Image (cartoon, rainbow over all chains, first blue to last red; front, side, top):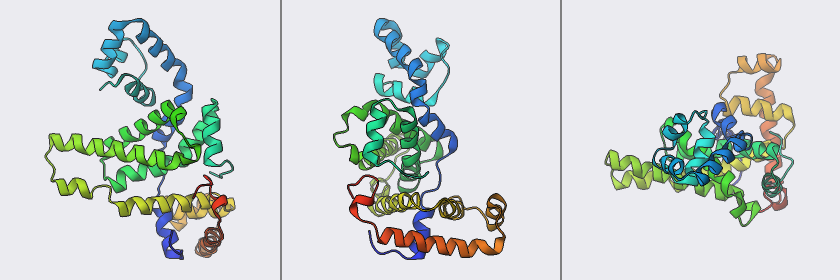
Amino acid sequence: MTAFNEERLARLIRALPPAPAAWVRAAAELPLAKAGLDEIVARAQADADFKARLVADLEAALEAEGYERDPAVIEVLKVRFKSK
Amino acid sequence: MAQTLSDSELVARCRSGDQQAWAELVDRFSRYVYAISVQAFRLPEADAEDVFQEVFARAYEHLDKLRDDAAVRPWLAQLTRRLCIDRLRAASRERPTADEELDLAGSEETLTMLEDALTVHEALASTPEHCREILDRFFARDESYRTIGKALDLPAGTIASRISRCLGRLRELLEGRTEADTPSGTR
């Protein structure tokens, strides 16, 4: 990192504005959502048809089964099931 | 926003299931991940949100695979870059984009600048709260003197001098920093 002066410091502080609070909250709450997550994963492991529906269209499958839409949980499930 | 744990300590706590540590990790790197996607790769807000959630989801899922806990920062940066590039490639399949446009996206210069910016924010987290607050509000949150004055109960006339004093303090802190002072202890 090169030398600092006030102008450069100001520019670098300005370069990282906060991410939208709702995004941060959703990501931070991942562990809290883990219970629901584990339940869905366990069910998918026991039910091949449910798993196939998750892989084909995760959000539609969850909605059809009445699961609450949680963006952070959906992203984790996408990683698990390589779904769309 | 004060940083007491190093990056590696924080990762170790996350791995042991400490929810508070996970929230702190998200908070510590949220601006960086966000800035990479919207500034370096210029993703639209909706795509940036998807990338943001996917980065932290993958990090949460794969934290066990991180070989060096102190390397969480470059790991997250790499993950974010990869997911941004995937997004741009997917978008260019729908709306053909010139190769040069993709090459320019995520320019190394911007990514390096954001890395420096994170270092400065980490140092900022070690300054006294009154400095941290006023510098973050004025520069990063783009608040006016009036808004800051109201929020911090300060006369508008003293805000400029406090900002200047705090920038000086931050500069001293950064210039006096040693390798071991950085949160990861690796830089």
